[in-house]
Length: 353
Image (cartoon, rainbow, N blue to C red; front, side, top):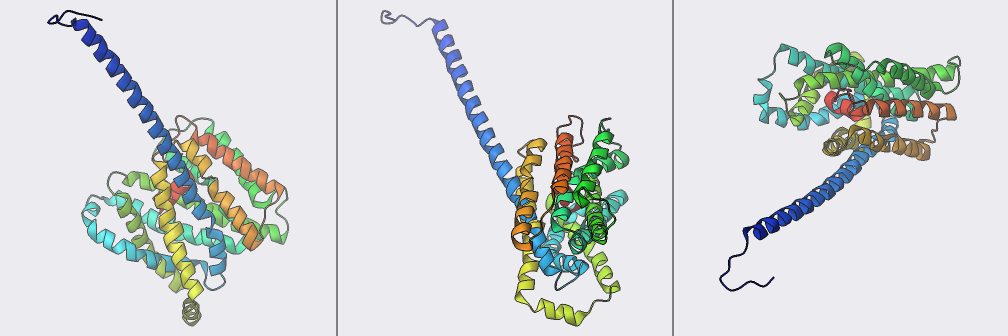
C-alpha cells in the first residue's frame, strides 16, 4: 500500500498486525507445548516399562539365592546393605523426623515392619512353594487391596461397582493360582501356599501404600524410603535370630562370589534403581497408561522364568491373569478412584518401601 512521505500509518494496521502476530505466536507455542508434552509422556511410559521390567527379573535371582540362604536371611541381608544408604540420609534429613506425631510413627512402623520386613519375606517365601510366574503375577492384585484399605482406614469414598470388581478379581486370582483345577492334589496345595504368601505380600504392600499416604507432605521420598529400611532392620534381625540359623553355613555361602553378586543386584536394582525409574515416569502419565506399561513386569518375568527356570503357566492361569489385569485397568480408569489406589503395584512397593 502506497502512502505519501510523512503520512502516519493508521493505528488499526498495527493493532491488526499485533493481533495476528500474537495469535501466530500463541498457536506456535501451543503446538510446541503439545509436542513436548507428548514426548515427555512417551519417555515416561518407557521409564515405567523399564522399571517394571527390572522387577520381572526378580524371580530368577531369588530362586538362585534360596539354594544358599533362607527367605528371611535374604531379606535381612538386603536390608543390611540398604541401611548403608539409609543411615546417612536419616542423619542428613533428621529435621523432617521432628514433624512426625504418634500416629505418623505408627504408620512408619507398619510400613517398615509390614510393607518391608514381613511382605518381603512372604514374597520371597512364595518362590519356595509356588510357581515363580504365579508369585509374580499375583502382585497385580495390590491396587485392589489399596482401594479396600483406603476405604476402611482413610474413609475414602469407593464407587459401588468396586465390590463387583473385587469379586471378579478374586476369581481371577483363584484361576491364576491353580488354573481350571480343584485344590485337591498335593501339588495344588503347595501352589496354594505359595499363592497365599504372594497375596499376603500384596496385601501388606497395599496397606503400606495407604499408610504412606498419611506421611506425604511431611517426609520426602528419600527420607521415607530410608526410614523404611532402618525401621525394618531390627525386626528382621529378631526374626533371623529366632530361627536359629546355622551361621557357619551362612558364612560359607557368603564366601561365594555369585551369592554376593546376587545380593548386590537384589539390593540395587529391584529395590532402588527400578523404583527411581518407575516413579520418575509415573509423574508424567495417566494411571491407565501406567497400568499398561507395567505389563513389562509380568512379560519379562514370564519370559525369563520360561527360558532359565523352565517354568510356565497353563491356559487357565493365563485366563486368571487376564481377568486380574482387566480389573486393575478398569479401576485405574474410575474417575472417583483414590489416587493412591490407581498407581498400581509399584506404588505399593514405594510407599511400602
